[in-house]
Image: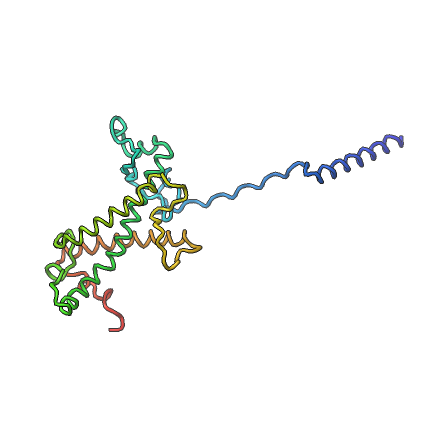
Amino acid sequence: VAAPRASSRTGQSTASMISLHAASLGLAAPASAPAAPRAPPQQQWLPGAGRSPSYLDGSLPGDRGFDPYCLVALARTRTSVDSGPWAKLDRPTRMVMAQDWEARKKVAWMREAEIKHSRLAMMAAAGWPLSELADGPLSKLLGLPANLVAGGRAPSLLNGGLFDNLGFLGLVALGTAYLELNTLDNVEGLTPSGYLAGDLGFDPLGLGEGKMEHMAEAEIKHGRAAMLAVVGFAVQEAIYGTPVVQQTPQFFKPFFL
């Protein structure tokens, strides 16, 4: 009766030694891998707005899934298929049927356009009221003709006077063409991956070091607000016929005066 117990103990000892030896060689069964952390849900532009389009996955700064009219399908890249039977499909269907790489290129194209318009709008939102405040005093000081239109309003498509200075517009067109040619390959995906839309390497003060994602998010938010502001300036002045700095002087008068 004792023999089997001894054999059992011997077997257990042998099994323990084999297990220890296997563990020392790294042959032990691997522990189950921990579950991958679940990605946080994408923020929506409006609570309860429904499911975001598949091509807006929240990976871009400021992406809240807002494209109710599927305008991203209008982007015309070098490889866009916008003719024949394909063109007869509605925009959402075209995006659903598009290859992943084509959808990504269209999104990148539209984001690049949004960034450029945002930056122009931020400069315009600051330059518009400043021109209305400073043009008169500077013109008198330098003995130059005023550049504002009737009523002291800034030149614009609705106010008129935008094309009076063709030389300046020509310089702007040349600068714009230069930037477009230097960013076209990035948008088309012909450069190494990792390109961030609108990244021209311009950061002389090093404000984006270590916090590029945060700065990109802030830029797109400020740019969207600026685009709305510039549209508001133009519409207000066209309707009322007075400069925006006179309509809302509390926003444009220095607090120390």
